Image 1 (spheres, rainbow, N blue to C red):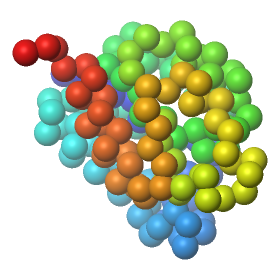
Image 2 (image 1 turned 180 degrees about the vertical axis):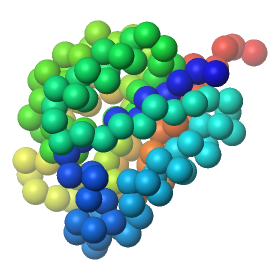
Image 3 (image 1 turned 45 degrees about the vertical axis):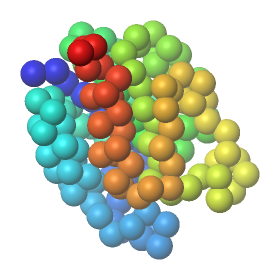
Image 4 (image 1 turned 180 degrees about the horizontal axis):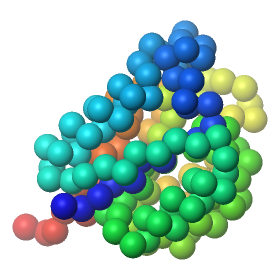
Length: 147
């Protein structure tokens, strides 16, 4: 069973409580359950992580080198600040899909720049937590052997 890593950055542990008018009422546990369900439909497993610490996210990206078919990443605030996460992703060959729950382009101007987008094979923004499911489907599509 191939693994898809789903990595979440700072403050996403507060999903469902923090600014629900922007991020919705689903919790991170709800997102994880949805990701597992969608991945299982395609015969994939999930490694689901969240951290408020940049170095942990980098360590998980490094770990993904060993066994991941792809990475779905919502770097949250690290999107706009972390060259280190970009460098780690640049060393990872399989597909990377960047996800943002809110439409970052309708928000403050500092949120319009993403370091991660320089590496991402696709970006999903503003589709709520459903964006994670779509990202998993895209990883599966990008890694499916040709017919």
